[in-house]
Length: 152
Image (cartoon, rainbow, N blue to C red; front, side):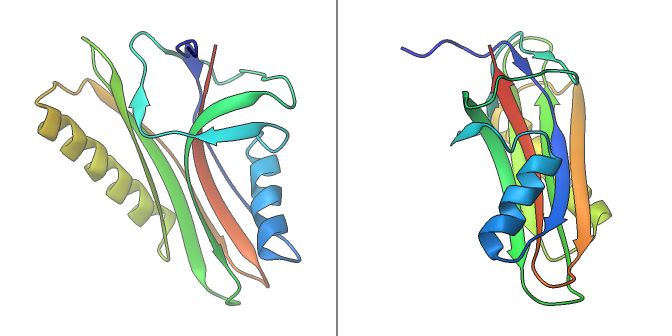
C-alpha cells in the first residue's frame, strides 16, 4: 500500500524544444519537476496535505502528480495550461487540470470553474482555490505544462 502524500505545490511552465517530447521535457525542467518520475494521478488532494512552495523532491523519485499539458508545432499559436486545487476546511481537496489553445487568463478561469463544479457535485463547501497557469506563443515546437506534485 502506498503512503498518503502530506505535501504539495503548484507549478506551471513553458518551453520550446526541437521535438514534441523535448519541448515537454524542457517544460518539466522549467517547472522544477523534470528530474522526477511522474505517476499521473486523478484529482484528489489528500486531507491535511500542506502547501510547500519550497518543496525539494529527490531526483528519480516516483511522484504522484496531477498535470495537464499541451504541445504545439504551429508557429505563432497561443497555448496555455493550468491547474487548480480547491481547498475544503473539513476534508480532502479537489484538483483540476486544463490545457488548450487560449490565453493564460482563459485557462485560469476555466480550471477554477472546474474546481467549483467539482465541489458542487460533491456537495462540499469550498474554502479557497489556488491556481497556477502559463501561456506560451509557439516559436517552432512549444509546450505548456501545469502540475501539482504530491509528496510525503
